Image 1 (tube, one colour):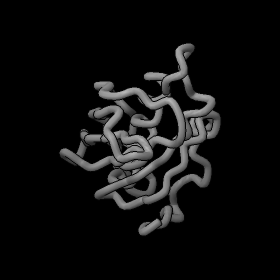
Image 2 (spheres, helix red, strand yellow; image 1 turned 120 degrees about the vertical axis):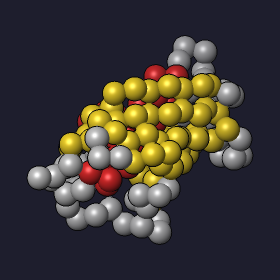
Image 3 (cartoon, helix red, strand yellow; image 1 turned 30 degrees about the vertical axis):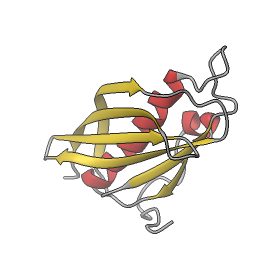
Length: 134
């Protein structure tokens, strides 16, 4: 981890993140990184579930937006678009979130999800409404 979690953020990531095994490994606001195991998050055919991938994207993008909003700020996702490129059936996937645009009221992030071999499994875009601290 190159950038630690800021002390002002909540210390828990939320119940869904815990159920899915999502772990943020780098809190850099320019390149937030998280991992999620495939095991336990598969669809009936043994591949990583698209909904789990979307939850990973929503989590990593929302945390990035929270860093942008700052202490006392609040964010909510308002649009998510995902494209699935390759199935993942084992191991861990990694999501790398980078800002496309961060404004006063909207922040948009690009997220690439890769498997352990570094192959892209999904790409996504998340837009969050930002309510900065007053």
